[in-house]
Image (tube, rainbow, N blue to C red):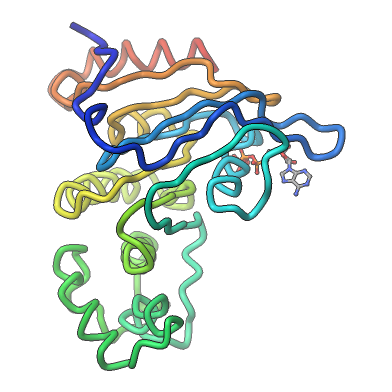
Length: 245
Ligand SMILES: Nc1ncnc2c1ncn2[C@@H]1O[C@H](COP(=O)(O)OP(=O)(O)OP(=O)(O)O)[C@@H](O)[C@H]1O
C-alpha cells in the first residue's frame, strides 16, 4: 500500500496541537484556518513555498507572535533552531553548546560535564575546544543542533536547518539528523521548502499553499516504502507534492 492514513505515533500523546489558526498582519492574510498535530516522538515537516508563512507558524507555536484566530496547545518544552547557526565566535564549541545551561545559572564546569556525553552521539567528538570559525558549515550546524537539543530535547522546532549548506553536505547532514533522531527520540517539527528533505526525514508531511496559506494535504510516510532502495516510490510522491505546490 502506498500511503497509510495513520502511523504508529497516533497512539501517543499529542505534543503540538494547532487548532484552526489564522494570522493576519494588518490587511495581509498570511495563514488561514491551519490545523496541525504532532505526536510524541514523531518527525513532522511543514513543506511550502517561500514566503507562505512557515516561520510565522513557528513564531506562533513559540509564542513570539499571537494568532488572529484559533488556538495552540503545547504539551512539553520547546526549543527553536534557526537556519543561521548563531554560534558565538569568541566561545568554544562546548561553551556555545552549554549556553542554554549557563543562561539558567548552571556552573560552567557542571554544564560542561552535562553536555560532554552528547558530543559522541552528535558526531562532535574532538571539536569541544575548537572555535566556530575552525568548523565547516555542516559541523557548525551539528553544534547548533546540539545546543538546541540542550535547550530542550522534548519538542524541537527546526527552521530550514540545512538551507545554507551545499547539496552534498546537506545530504550527509540529513542522514546524520535521522541517525541522531533515532538515538534521542525527540519530537521534531521541521520547516522546509525542500521536497526531498521532507520525504527523507519525515514520518508525516503537511504541504501548505502560498499565502493566504492553507494546508493542502497531509502525507503519512511509511519509511520502508520510501527508503533509498525504492527510489521510484519517492519519485511518485515527489510528483504528487509538486502538483500541489
Ligand atoms: N512582522 C510582520 N509584519 C508584517 N508582515 C510580516 C511579518 N512577518 C511576516 N510577514 C509576512 O508574512 C508572510 C509570511 O512570512 P514568513 O516569514 O512566515 O514566511 P516563510 O514561509 O517562513 O518564508 P521563507 O520561506 O521566505 O522564510 C510574508 O509575506 C511576510 O512578508
